[in-house]
Image: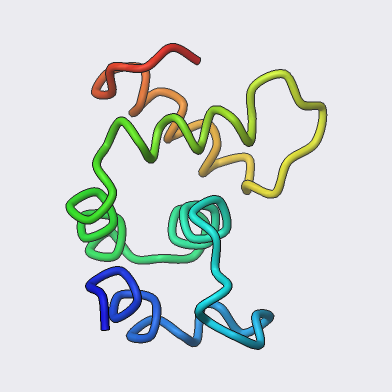
Length: 90
């Protein structure tokens, strides 16, 4: 089992709406962990995917859209966080 698959399996309760955990996309993974995960979950996700990749996925899901699936507080926090710490353009 790959490390990312184990990471998802260990947090399977967060992915209750997904029948087959092997079908969790990076977009769904990032959205779910940022919205519902603990700070430790976020740190581990950053270690696995990398901060810039997560920021790219986040921006692709939020910038220029009138609606997205992030809680407003989460979107606000990570917009500031990625602007300061990631090296991607929004």
